[in-house]
Length: 466
Length: 104
Image 1 (cartoon, rainbow over the protein chains, first blue to last red):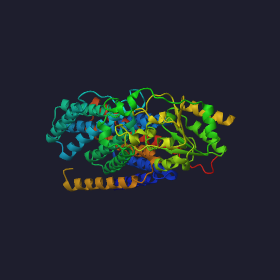
Image 2 (image 1 turned 90 degrees about the horizontal axis):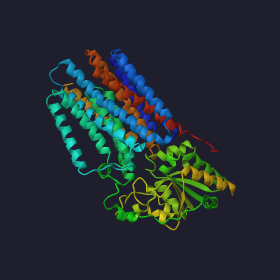
Image 3 (image 1 turned 30 degrees about the vertical axis):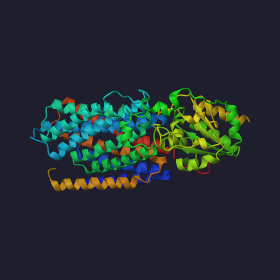
Image 4 (image 1 turned 45 degrees about the vertical axis):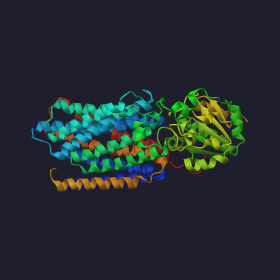
C-alpha cells in the first residue's frame, strides 16, 4: 500500500509541476489549473486512505465545513474582490500550518516521551511561527483591501523597536523549545504562538494599501515555506515539494512586483509608504488644491470620436466601479467609427499584477489590445487621447523627475506624452500612495469627474449620439 | 527521523523543488500573475493533507482532549478552505481567459 501511495504521490507532484507549466500561457492556463486540481485530489485521497479512517469524523467535519466555505465564497465573490480573497485563502493555509504544529505538540505531550527529535522540534516551531505570521498578516491585508480598516499605513513611535522585541521573544522561546526538546511550560508555548500572531498583525499594519499586492505575494510564499517545513515535521515529501514550489513562485512574484514599483522588499516592509509625513509635502507641491480643468462628457465624446488612436489606461477606479463592461462598450462604439483602441496596462495597476487583465478579459476585450508598460509607452507620443480610467499613481510624472517624491524612480505610463489626456476620477482625492499628481495640472490634461462606470456610460451615449 | 541520511534526502528534495519552482514559474507573463498567485495559493492547500495526518495521529494516540480535538478540526477546516477555495477562485479567474476568436 505504501508503495502505491508513494507512486501516486509522485503522479500528483508531476501534475502540480505540469499544471504550473501550463499556467504560463492564457490558452492552456485552465488546463493547468485543472491538472493541479486533479493532482491535489489524488494526493488527498491517498492521505485519507493511509490514515485508515482514524478520527474520520473530525476530518469529515472539518473538510465539509472548509470546502463549503471555500467554494461558496469563491463563487460569490466579485471579480474586484479577488485579491483579498486570495489573501484570505492564503491566511487559512498559514493558520492550518500553525495549528498542525500545535496539534503535533499535543500528540507528543500525550505520548509521554521524554524529548522531541531535534528535526521535529525545529520544524514544528518554525512552521508554527511562520504559519501564524502568515495567517495574521493575511487577515490584516484582507481587512485593508476590503476597506474594513483604513488602507493607510498605521504607524506609531517605536514601531520597529516593538516588532524587533517581539521577534527576539519569538526567537528566544523558540530556541528554548528546541533546546529542551519541547519540555516547556505550556504557557510559554502558547505565548510563542500569540507572539507570532502579534508580529503578523504588526508587520502588515504600517504597510499602505498600494503595497498590498507585494505583501500578499510575500505572505503566499511564507505559507509555502511553512508548508514545506511542516513536511519535515510530519515526514512528508509531498508537503515539502508543494511548499517549496509555492515558496519559490511567491518569491519570484514578490521580487517582480517590487521591481515594477521600483521598490525593494525592505522598503515595502519598513518604509511606511504614503504615511503623509516626512519630506513628502514638498515633493507633492505643498499638498494644496490643484488647478485643474474639468470638461463635460460631450466634449470628451467629440474628442474621442474624431481621434485616430485612443489609449485606455485603466486602474483601480475601474475595478471599484465595475466599469470593465462599460469600457468595452465604449471601445466598441469607437471602433465602429474607425478609431484604433488600445489599453495600457501598468504591471501594478489595480491591487494585484494582472488585475486589470483579468477584469478586461471578463469584459471580452481581446488580449492583443492589451499593451504592457513598455509597449504602451512607445505608443503614447502618437496617441490622440489617453483616457485614464481610475488610475492615478501609475500615471504620476513626479516619478520621472521629482527626486524627492516617494514614488521617484517607479516606472510609470507616460500618459502626459499623449496629445490629450482625459482623467476619469471620482474626486481630487489622492491615490493610494497619498500624493498629488502633477499630471492633472498639465495643459493637455482635463478631468471628467464622477464614478468611472457612470462617466464611461455617459461617454458611450454621447459618442453614439454624434 | 533521527536518521541523518533520511534528513539529507528530504533536504535534497526541498532544494530541487525550489529550483523547479523558479524554472517553471519564472516564464509566466504578467497577465497571468494574479491567476498564478491564486493557483500556487491553492497548491499550498496540500497543508490539508498535513492537517489530516496530525488529526489521525492525535486520535491514534488516544485523542480525548476536547480543546485539541477542536484545534485539529479547525486545522482541517482551514486547510480545506485553502485548497477548495483556492482552486475554485482560480478556475473563476481563468474562465475569463477563454479564447474569443473572430471578435464581435
